[in-house]
Image (cartoon, rainbow, N blue to C red; front, top):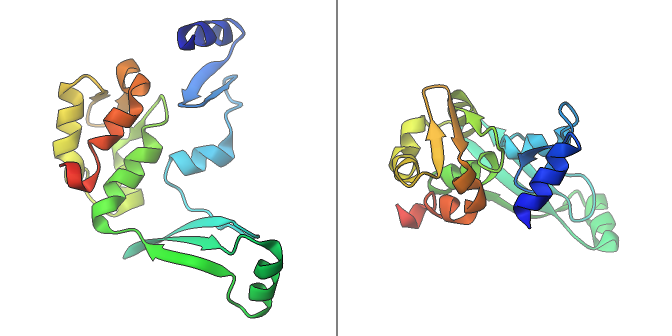
Length: 164
């Protein structure tokens, strides 16, 4: 079914640029591309989520979900319900969980730019993924193979801190 969908959309001029998205070239969703490239975003409103990067840490936040409670907490200057720092052990997984959704993968330099870590921090799982045919890489770019895109969960599991 997946192959049929890809074929029909390709015939109609669409490219499969992200795990769950197709678009005509140049019409990819820029909003979502920011997520997949591990960019920052500030969520405003009930239930909104944020990812904020600082020189020494990455913080995720979630605003209070219920609108009435959210408005009350805004007036008290406490709209954030949950805030946590992404641990250094989890940042590799979080980056890969987003960036490997993209068919084009990511430039190697983006990893250091967005995580504050050298790409060597992910070398062991990258080597394992490459050996299994789930990614292809060179000194400029890392991208999932067709097999890696089809088995993305298996690929991503290789980057979980406890699975190294």
